[in-house]
Structure formats: structure tokens, C-alpha cells
Image (cartoon, rainbow, N blue to C red; front, side, top):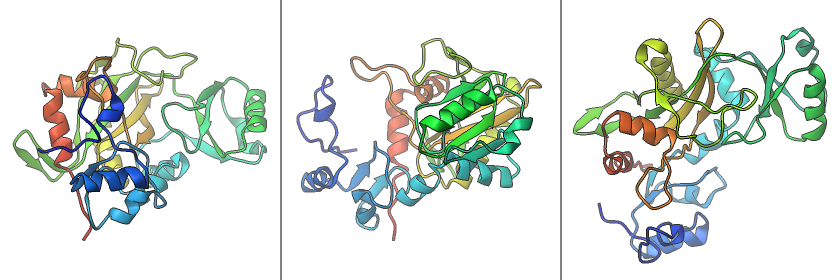
Length: 284
């Protein structure tokens, strides 16, 4: 697998490994001979990479899907329409608290409809706390019921060739239990104390996550966060279209939720990254 880089690769310098994600960076990669772009950035129809869909191979999500399914409210409704379990939620904007919340049990979770890595996700213990949050935020928010059970992340791989076997189905890696919560909110980064959950504890969660990845038309690994209610029933909280795929491959590298699952599968990290590369696609 020949690679081109913007400079002489240095394990200590990110800039020596990756081209910029703007038009100038993409053009530099093309001049260096790149035929496939391994995206490590959020995209949208307005992103420069959208102009290259029929001209270069892409390892990553389709820009149009990235924009559409980044909205948690939109994605949650699509999953619910497919009979997948998602928390009860309501979209709020403009500072007005929907009257339906008056009948909800508290606490609840408040988060932006569009956001990643736990940005501005918080627990609200009273209706007044929800009102305060709405007064502070101009962007649309999603208010969801709070689930008190354990939380897990499931990385789902798109159809492809993995360790010599070709799969036409989405493949779920082992679920990784999230820990280190503060006020019921999982940390943005792993704590190092995460463990792989026994399949008997997650029921049909892996099948549900594979179906969710299919619904969002994933062409790249996605990480799906889920949580159990007090009865042990699992609900999908979020579909992360660009999860952190980093692994323990360079100095200062730390484990990620995906790399923990990869390790549990017995895959060397390099084998996993090569397999992801083989999911490259190009529009006709």
C-alpha cells in the first residue's frame, strides 16, 4: 500500500503525516501522486472533497450523508422509524420550553442537535435547568430522557474484506463499556479503565447497531454509543460518523474506544487500518 505524505514521516509530528483538509491540501496530495484520500475530517457538500467524488477514491463517509446524519434529531427519528430503540426526545429551539417537558421525569440530557465528542452535553435535574440552558444557546438542542444503566460503544465496519474474508454485511466489533462518567455523562476520551462487555449483557444491541449503520449508509467505520435503561433494555444514543480510529502506533498515542475493540478481536492495529483502507469507494 504505497503512501504519499506532505513531508518525511516523523512519528512525533502530525503535520508530516497528513495533508491539510482544505482545497490547497487536497491539491498538494494530488500533485504528490495520491489517488485515494483517507479522510480524517468532517465533510459536507460544501467541503472541497465533494468536488472529487468521481475523480479520486475516498476512504470516509459520503459528504452528503455526513451532513444529513450529523443531526441527532434527524438520525434518531430515522432509527425509531426502523423500530430501533432510541431515547424519548424532543427538539427545542428559540428559547421556548415545550409544554410536553412538564410531564417528564427528571433528570434529562440536553445536547446540541449537531455536535461531536460530547460537546456541550449536560444533565439537567430540573425544568428550570433546561430553561437556563435554552436561554444560553442559540443553536437547536435535543432534550432526551436520562437512562440510568451502563453505557457502551460499538464500532461498526462497512461491508468489505477483513482478514481474508469478504463480508457484504456490516460488522460489529465487541462492545466497549464506557466508564468515568461525571453527572451521568461519559468523558470525551477513554479513561484507560474501559472493558469489553460480554455479549450476554447486550442482547440484540450489536444487531441493532449494524442496522443503524446501514440506515445512515455508512461507508466508513462508525461508532455507536448506547445505554441501558433500568430494566436492561438498550437504546442507541448517538451515531458517530467519524470516530477516532487512532491506536497505539506512535509516541504519545493513546487507546481509543475503537482500538480497544480492535484489540479484543485479536487484530493488530496495522491490520485494521489496512482493512479500513480497502473500503475506499469512488462514484461513477
